[in-house]
Image (cartoon, rainbow, N blue to C red; front, side, top):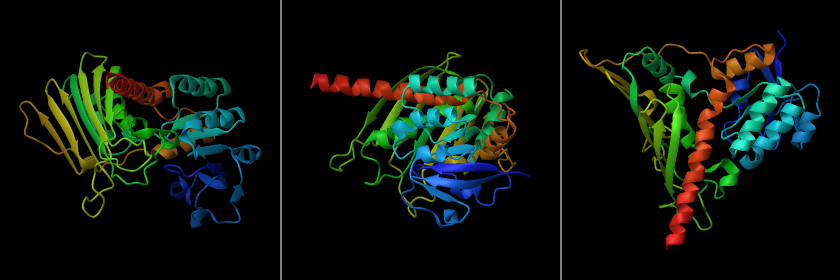
Length: 330
């Protein structure tokens, strides 16, 4: 079987080096703009390039995984890749504004080049199981969603949001995915407030916490928090802490600490703990299969996949408006 040939551009994010090591359907043939090159990529079969343009000039390369050194330029990088005939898998957020997001979707459709954001939340456990239970109607119509996404703080966090998108778009996008992809309800409107309280790093604009208020398309509500307040190991057992509760007309389903505990509570039934050990489809494998075959594998449309990113962009804009208003009142 011929393997899909990937180039990796940048290591500013969740680059897929480890996932492609010995992968049966894809391999890395070139990299560029790595601050530190992993030992696994120091191979005669992997070319080290100086720029994205050099990668794109290589006819052997079929797909590019983008973790652009400057996230603000990543939408432009993605468009350049697609126009060069290369499929794209992009770190979140893939765009900083809705115009860029629209251009990405339009270009993917026009060129028939596969584009995906690194957004496989609903395809992994416990969220695949939770989404299935909600979709089955077990808890009834979704009325409210409550979510939390927390990561450790450190002075190494980017001081400028242009580097990684900032807290709301880099972390808060998960909260929007929990609503739209896991709870299965479209967002109708979103508001957001954020604070840099606790960031004492000179010259840093990195926010420590954000709160979201969300109106749902079905008339329901959602609330969410995103922050850099989780203790590091060994004080906390995992890299971050995420919780999700979906309340329905008949009961609720709740995941604590990324699936460490999952509870299903439904009227008239004993409390249960759904089995989340069931295997799921690997998101990267599905992306590779789409790129290799040209067939639609991932069930979500690109518009549905990128909708949480759109709402994170809008939430970020609202947070900035609130900050501006607060300054004007001083």
